[in-house]
Every structure is written in structure tokens, then in C-alpha cells.
Image (cartoon, rainbow, N blue to C red; front, side, top):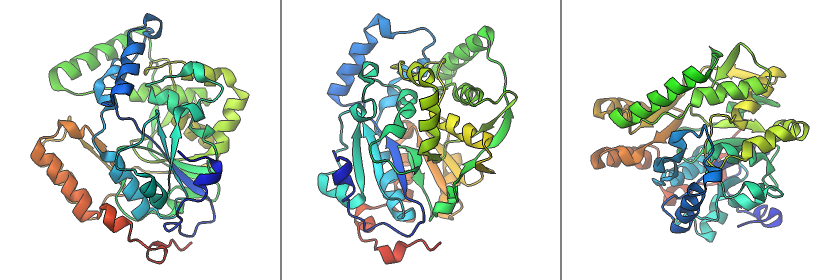
Length: 361
């Protein structure tokens, strides 16, 4: 674990030129870790934490499975976004096996424990809720004024520049406008039933993601439409969240109290997006440069077409979901694409020099 003094001394071999200091923030968990599993089961057994309106899929063990995507996420940042200053990895008293102290220094990774970002709010720990954790990511000690938030299953697939995420002080948001639909008791019940049968019959996990985006937009003052964002890296200005939560402490505390995903929650990432849009501080773009690989839905012909897009350099961002569901042959093909076609091998990344990867503004 690094403190504010030591993480600033991280090996800077990957740093390119950028007028802004930009960090990356990743959340990660290894749910197979026995200590983490014991904590989770203990909280699940406490009826006071089994609150009504919990999102059923938020309790699913797939939420906590580590398929090794994190390694490719970090390597892709260092290969295709070498101008990133520090990669902050948020964990619950865990460190990925492959991230030795030496490799942390070489790859510029700062391990951030939940206790650091929940400082003064320890009553909300332990938490197994990404929405609660995302509410406090702006509290990382020493975090840059601008950062890019990524889930651990995100991979950057080609060279990107700071201007792909920030133009001046504006954030670049990828998505489309959608109408805000009301979610009354009947619609919520139907969604719950739909999620149950989708999982039971087809193995498809539904997370009420659109409701989450709608609630976040409404909190930012949007009434009729919201900017719907897919699974892509999210550019955030740290002060946007800090200022909002300084002014709305009750919204902050109410969101972090849920230890598992809950339908009453909003998402601070989508909140930040809409706060920026409301201030005219966002540049909106079509989401035509990302691709999701999903083990629940991508049958072999579909998977082959998607991998072909990656191999032909037609994709900027990839989201890898449900790798454990793919058959062994399919997983091997995905890994081969990441390693061979994208060159995401540790020994290759560590050979990268500043000169070869420097971003010219």
C-alpha cells in the first residue's frame, strides 16, 4: 500500500506529455478469497443488513468472481494510455497475486484500501456494493484533479490520447439521450420477475442498470431525458463530486449505507456525467468505439465477429463480462486476441519506453 508521499515516487517510465495530470481508478475484488467470503457471509446473515429492495443480482456470486481481467486492464492502460499518471486500485484489504511490490512500482499502481476512502465513515464497512464504493472514489488521497474510472473488466484496445477523455476542462461522454421513464411499484415488481426468469431460464443477469442511470440523472436535476452511457471508461473531474457531496452530505451518506446493491441507490459516475452536462461542461459523442464481450449472450459466431473487430483495430474500448461462462475453447480464443493481437503481455509492456509511447499534444 502506498501513501501520498510514496506513491508519487512511482516509476514514471510510462508518463507521456499531457497538460493535465490524469489518473486512472479501478475497483477490484477477489470474491474467492476466504477472508472476504467470510465477511460477506457474516453480513448476509445479519437480518439488519438484508434490507428491502436489494437488487437480487447484487448478491450473485458472479459479482465477486475474479477472472483475471484486471491484469489486462492495467496492461492496456500502460500500453495504450502511457500518459496516465497513477493507476489507483481500490481493494478490500486485498492485493492481486500478480501485482508484486516491484510490479506495482513499475506499472505505477497505487493500492487503495476501503478504509482509506471510507475514512470517518467506517460504519458503512464492510461493503460489497460497487455503487457505495463508487460514491467515495473521489476521496482517494492524492487523487489527480481529473481521472478516468474503469471497472476491472475494461480493456483499452488502441492508442488513446488525453483528448479522448478531456478537452480543456470538459469531459468527453459517450452515449445517447433516452427518455426518463417512471418506475412505480408495479414496474419494479415486473422488473424483479423479469430478472428472476432471465437468470433462471437463460442464465442472463440483469442489474437494473437503466434505473440506476435514471435515478442519477434525476438527482442532478434532469426530469425528461437522461444521457445513457454504455460500459466504457468514464472521465471524471474530482471537484465535481467533491463539491456536490460537500453541498449534499445526506445524499452521500444515504448512498453508502447499503452493503449490497439496492434499487434506492444512484451512481456517482452517472451523477457526475449529468452534473457536467447541466453546467455545459461536457462534450457528447456517439458510443461507436466500444464493444462488449458477454459470456451470457455471445454464442460462438457472435464472439468470432466481435474478436474480428478487435483484430482489425476497429474498437477503442472493450468490456469483458462473464468470462467464466464461456467454454474453455472460447476463453482461449479471447485470451489469444488480448495477448497476440493487442500485445497485452507483461514482458512487452515493461519494455515500453517513454519515447515510443509519448503523446504529442
